[in-house]
Length: 607
Image (cartoon, rainbow, N blue to C red; front, side, top):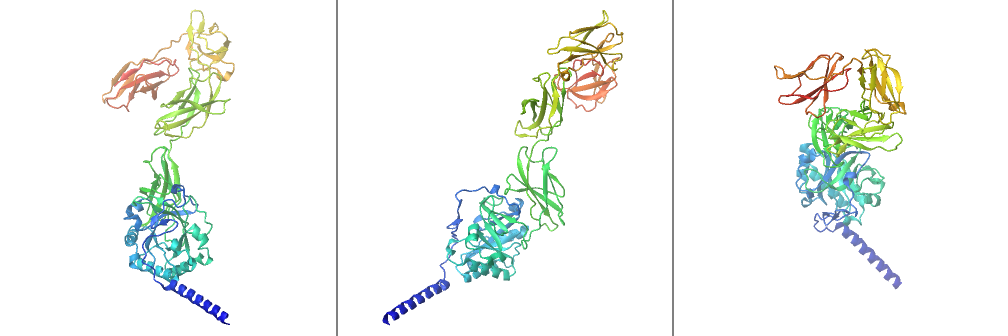
């Protein structure tokens, strides 16, 4: 009996001691707190630079349902220039109002400034409080702390309960979270909980928390938390104009109810003809304009580049660079929608349109293409029909190119691309064009001492020569002779006949072009400019004598005597006035008579 009483007394004493201990935990006042948070991301109040050991790049973060980009801030970000933050394209902010229970010394000293600036500038914002609660009573006091500070403000996003401090680990997080959120909700505010992915999976997995918004922290390129959540904090190393420290970066997922931000427009992007980014978007009901934001990083660093009511072409973009764009609708009261989707565009030059043919004189492949805006030059790529890959065949700053290395009888395919600043940015390749390298044309001489004797220099690789004759200059030329030699005498023709000769290759597709026209009584005049003068208005004028066989004349012009001559006029007359000439500039001209041999006059200068 005595032994029983001893055990009973001991048991009672233990029970009383445990009860007193529990009561002490519930009632004893905590020591004075400081803002020295300790958690998975803080050590004595200072952010841990890399809590995972491998700092992932915020610029690579992606979520298929992300609609807005935001930041969360506290006094640790110092004095924020919120106008710059808004101009940087930040869609929303979550602002810390304080930490721990409802005492003035636990208020965030930047709360009133940050909240007032967001309201002044129309930046959607929410609120969070860092929790040090050990029990339900303290959690409710923390809710009172928030309600005291938000009085007189109008946050458009929820109030969040930041649960992460290591000192709270032994206690009932579910009960404390529900107590905090219920009190905030009863006061008429949307409310949610902030925690890391690990906390959500370990301490906050009770289904009773499903009725509150969830803000998940996982610093990663993607969020692989499988539960429902409305905000994802993807990094702590963001850099935003207007903030002089690193800042936490967040994505809003979808457009959840009570988050107070209008859906943005749907943005599309392409390249304009000049290779610059061109943006277009769907209209937003009630919008009076749209603000365009640009960055060289996907998730931060945006600046406003234009406000427009229509499509936008970014003429200030650099060539060969990748840009990211988003657009916000602007409403009559100055407020803005959420951001559109982000569009990525890399600037490049427009693609040349190429034509190719065998040069009439040399038989070599000759390419021409349109001039491309901003192009520094062009690269020509070639492959033979039997080859698999294209190789670089040449470069030029002109819009034409003759492939002098091509081999007769070979089919070649060509592609051209425009190059910016030597090689920094390049266009896409043009559509492939093919041509056969042909024999060079022969230069025919005629002697009329005994009939019409034609002669020409032998052409290497030619297997023979076809001689054609016509009774009129521009008539139908018919084959009258195929010869293996390099002479032919026509004893059956007349004094008014005309001739052309082509060199024959073993594959007829590589035959040369037909020679220039010659005839028995036809002298081949060389057009010579007769006068070079200035009109009364000071405009350049040239003239030349009439050629009996010519039906029209082609006028060519160059800025240098031995430079590239470009066609400027086709006329049936014998004079030309260059009305587009610039005062004080020297011009050089050449004339080609149509249906005459293609000999050009000596260049004449006119200033």
